[in-house]
Image (cartoon, rainbow, N blue to C red; front, side, top):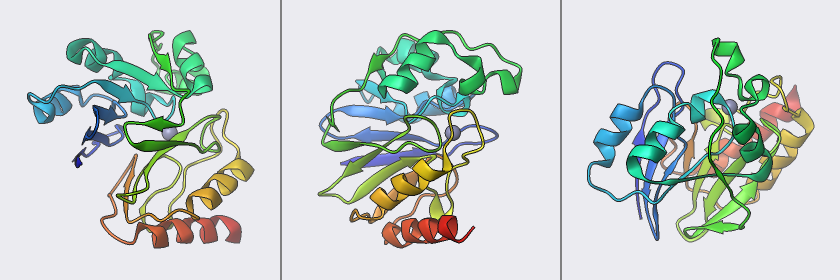
Length: 204
Ligand SMILES: [Zn+2]
């Protein structure tokens, strides 16, 4: 498996190009579609999995899915908000934007291209993480970040108690490499970063 990171700039999240059983993107970013396309080059992208509904993860989803002819996926409640263009919870209204409803498939399976799809609510109602047990890789979205960071829960559909539960669930996994939705990736012993996030959350 090969994972390439297209680091987010400005408000955009990080976008990941995964070459596995299927070739897919994790998240679509905001204003970085050109950089993503350049990095993809001639890799045939099958799908784009959105970790959650927030605009900094989905703004470029339509452009990328159209140009790459790739199917968009999100967990059921996130997909519904994106289909409806729910500006309030997508946070497009916070950016003075109106979000155009997306054509998106519901990710109902519990595995995707060799990854376990983990429901990790808290940052949003149905945020997901993708976990590969053999390779000990976690795509953690905005649920957990490097160096003990964790997702905000003060935004619409956020829930602090659920975030603590979700990170507690992640803390039970064997994670070596972690690819969060923002800031740096963790190349080894990512489990210690997750454990620190959980400790920090429980402390305050
Ligand atoms: Zn977010």
